[in-house]
Image: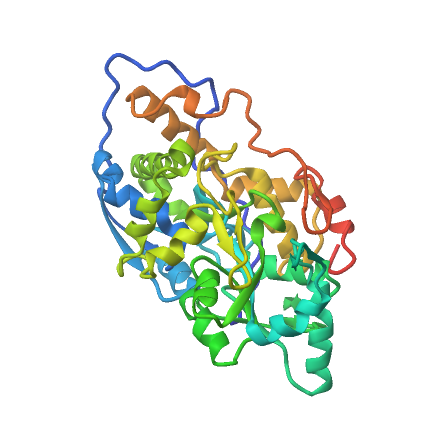
Length: 456
């Protein structure tokens, strides 16, 4: 896949829905009822577990409560989804968290896309084939007879070296160049001393493989398992259920989950074009209201609804995978090597644990640092630029308005939300469980300087 670099756009925030973040007001006795400018909507998604807030909002009537008639439509791959949203064929979409940032920076096109809601946190994994796992397992430290996690890509390095000696390429799949699975895979490889390759758009090289020890290529999520089974790839980075599917089919072994790379990072967002939000501000808020309720339902009562959610999205019109496979991650467990089932309670997060579905600026900044690190963004930028791009793409102001309306209508309580009175929408600094490197969203350049591999 190739993409063009366009000049960075500087566009003002959505005036029609931009709101000051004040204390959540007490519910009025008779809340005003607004009407959506566009009640009939088509929203696109990819067949991944983390599209579940959209399915729940539809199946539980949350969209209907907002006067919305929503058609959820599966898309064949992320590029098709992105292009259809940008050209107006879709009104909204389940998107990789970095996609709106690709839009804001001009990397993926000139149509500005914004994210007023985060659909999921964590939720991805990296899987290798049985053959590769058999070769790398001897390099993995063991505890009580089981591999010690998180597993470093350092265990994979000798395997890659042997492939090189035999003249065979070591190909790994990811889902989209300006995407979460691509950057998580690169992070994991580099942390283990394996160079994942660089993008060099200034020289017309958008392969992402310049100087790499491996080759990374785009594979649509539902095709990951079959592509590895055919021997085209030796492994891949993707969301669920396609890691657990490899275990069920006994053809692969997941080696790490994304919460062990960057804990509670935004993985998918709900995206709309800025033009759509400007033209349909009430509709945009109503969609976010329905998604807040769906995300709350998913995490309510210590995940009491997760098994039901798995059954919902197992339907062919949603993810179309066996609900028992979806259950593995959705209900807080994850199977690595066959029989090695471990508790991973935070693999899928939607609302709880300080997340709430808020589009945090710090999450946007993390993805921007990865875009710079691997050359998607060819030039270094000052710290302030990262915040500027984050605010251009991620729109917590819309979320705040939606939350206020839900409280005013009695559908949720003020105590269900964080204190939004003085919220900076920046998470506290955190250290990666994988490599111990600290990320502070206020200091993106210092963060980039801490890595041995990649741009500064």
